[in-house]
Image (cartoon, rainbow, N blue to C red; front, side, top):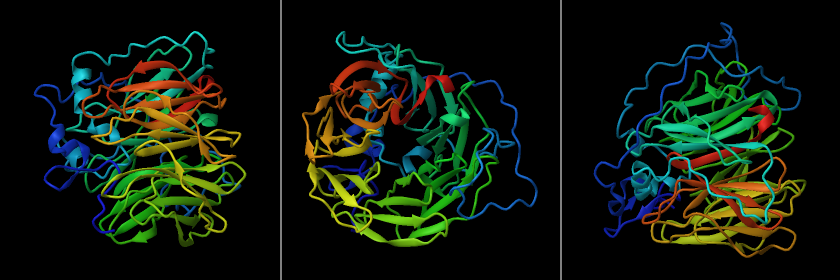
Length: 455
């Protein structure tokens, strides 16, 4: 698998070479449409409680009994990263961000199409509950300049954008603590940033600096720890970050050798993490209480994003591409014995997957590729293993997250090649119908939905 490109967001050009979307020869941005104006800088936020001198972070916190953290704010911001500036986003290792392929979308943003206008909710659908989608968007391909855009599910209104470090590609939230965390990789070699956002004020605190290039993260169930997947030329690592202090713990080597895109899910009991290994076509089990790395669990196809079905011990893994062609399957894997179920056919280039709280349905975003203008989300009946009729959304759907009620999903549409994107769609799951579609600022790469009472 040494010839496999770094991630499913890479595509082959007519010269036979593989390129990340932002460098693909067929997708050069038109002159003057590379970016949109920077948002106003937020008011300074007071520093929080710094780590105590000599404090030691346990290698793998986050198991049962760990205390909850008090909130964002980790002391003074880290120094300016070397190598920052225009062009650094071109070199960074990206999570499955099909969004960065959409230079035409940037033209639409520059022309004022994606300025936060919302469409109407279908009259036959109920009004979504009072929840907020926090959408991570990239404003400028060249610099990776990033913000978080709050979107009110009930009204479709956009809140003021929240600037975060450039190269942002993941977000997670702890609603019980009124805090969200954004993971950014500003440079090609690291370090990376983990930035807390106070959901009550929509203000970002000082980021924690994490060595190497970060690809993904997940929070422990009690909200005390973020587990961050990082890579360098020598391997793939799991790094714990104490969210009370921002202190970074010792890195655990999960895989040695050339890095491969990986995502992570932590089990509800907080004892185990599973990482996907795209090139290795496998899931990797990590015991968070001991740091022991288990043997690879074969997926049978490149392992992209995945989700765990509640109370079953089964992971559903997207298979986006194999380095030579775009795939169209979702693979169930029993994590207890490693048994693989029959792959389930979904749309072309599946990217992200979310599972409803009752465990009955999986929702797969069919992200496509530069030549496949896919615009659907495929619902999969997990009781029968059969895919239902696809739901039409915007072009290039990539990230997906569920409202806490489980009745609504929010999808980030990136746009691919010729089609404008930069929108989020609300899906009413009881009817598998699209409701409101809202334009956002920049290219959506990740999102999370939180109850509005926490914001």
